[in-house]
Length: 201
Image (cartoon, rainbow, N blue to C red; front, top):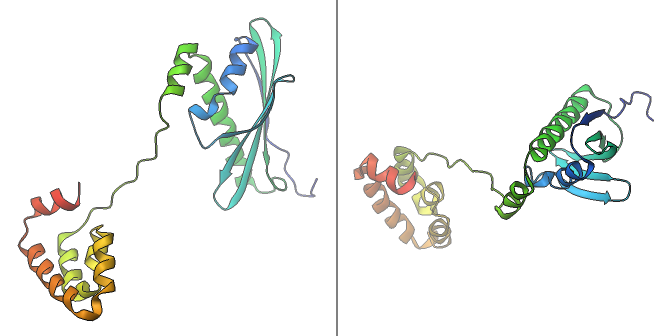
């Protein structure tokens, strides 16, 4: 262990659910958050490891160990560890604790679902993150068409990548410059409503 290493964050709780119910919940965490992927599992010892990649880091491993106390009570132990090295900064521990919180939150949600509820989650496609489309400005598009239209810059700005590449490839013929001037006139006289309907929806 490094001199300034901070111990891996660990937490153990007991829940009033059977071992089988908890095991089924642990195995399906990825259904609620696909950034957590199962890395390894040992069904005999009820040990599961998830991994999560992080920006500017190799990420973390999340070790989950479950142990039956009674038929209706189970112990869940979670430990967060770095994929490489040890925790040595307080912000790293804060981030690790966020993983810990998410794990227990996801487990609590999954444990309260019926088997049919988990099957429904499995049948749903994973939701892709919504990418916010940037709002295009008509005046800026017109100015780009007037000053840099021969290079197709206004087409790239408006999301018409193929047209922009064609303008760029044939810019030496001056035809794109003529077409860009036509685009400039069209943009100038186009109503804001028509522009938004075409480029901002």
